[in-house]
Image (cartoon, rainbow, N blue to C red; front, side, top):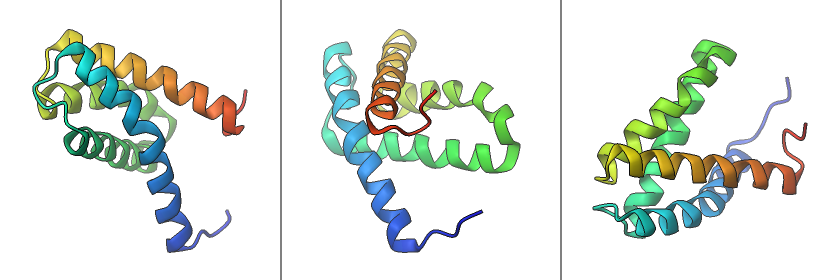
Length: 109
């Protein structure tokens, strides 16, 4: 396992946050989320990423079954939207992440 420096890890987190937040922010505006400003959306994306990372670290690949519900809950309660709105945000987030992974060659299948 390769070691990664703290600076590189923070740069990676910041890059993912910058690339993942705008589509969720736009989707939050479309679904009419109660908190659709940029900062709450960025915090929701960051919280979802941190919790998902901790789940993968603790549970391994079994966490992939739980992570969509984590994002659904975070978007529902933190962005003050309906379950349908949170589901749409999750679908758009997953679609954008898949396109981003394909574009950057990360986890390319």
